[in-house]
Image 1: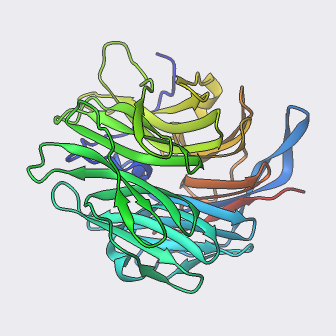
Image 2: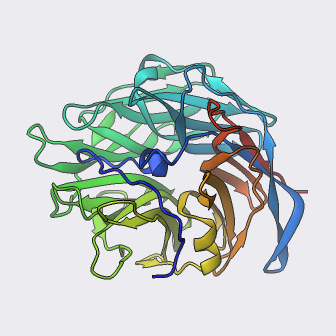
Length: 416
């Protein structure tokens, strides 16, 4: 099997939950969490079609939470090159606590949350600087409570609870009166994990009927919408024993959810775990889902990046070049501004010292590697959002020196 030769310690997940953007940072002690925000400056350009795309990233200012012994960013929502919000979680004593950072065009600053500052953050979606929704929840493997926070331009506060329970992993908002969230719920006897979805009408949340797979555990982790009547979501389906874990996908047509087939990477006869980390749909006939997969082994398992492409009617697994497989061990996030203009971020292993941040541009047929600033011994990128081909922000993490406390770092891409 062709692919990266490096390996990482992979811990057996406990219970029915696999949070997407936990990515490999929670898979083993070999991965140290750091935060990086990246700006892509046109210091170096690569030809893509008839235009050039800047491939060199540079750092920008970002704040680390005061309680940051480690953690990760979940996702990012940008309205323009001067207005972005990103959700994330700090990790202490195996407990995740949500935080939000806001980009003002020159730097990232922490934004105080309301009641649910102790919840674990899922996705965030903004339709204006006065309307952002962040979803998440508390606890897992048993009773759980959905957490939803709203930003009104001045402060964050709790909004109406959903009619159901569980954990909401991601959300898309198209207006103040329309948001669609996805996630999962563990039954009272913990025998099953079922998919959940909630629809916001401006005043209340309504639980939707969502089909689950025939497996004991089914989750939806990511969602992307072209319109209020055209959304795709990705997740996992797996048995009570947790392995193997197949990809799972559903489509929303404005009135109901339906299951659509999505291929899972294969490794001969070995069982595999496939983890979708993000989903971006720039058009009705193009969506790109990214993540990673690994074979189920008794010891150390190699990680492999994964990408799936939606053509409007079906998913197809994207064949990755040897160059991409040698630079990435996983894809963390993707942002597409057009069907043939996507940035993907993640991490790879340059040596045994730890993970290294990585970024690549996809033009619909091939990849161009980005030149990422790595001002430390360990780094990774968790989230990216582009408002134009050469106007992106990416967030991740950084450890400057061995034994040092992780720091939040920022990088950005700006058009000339």
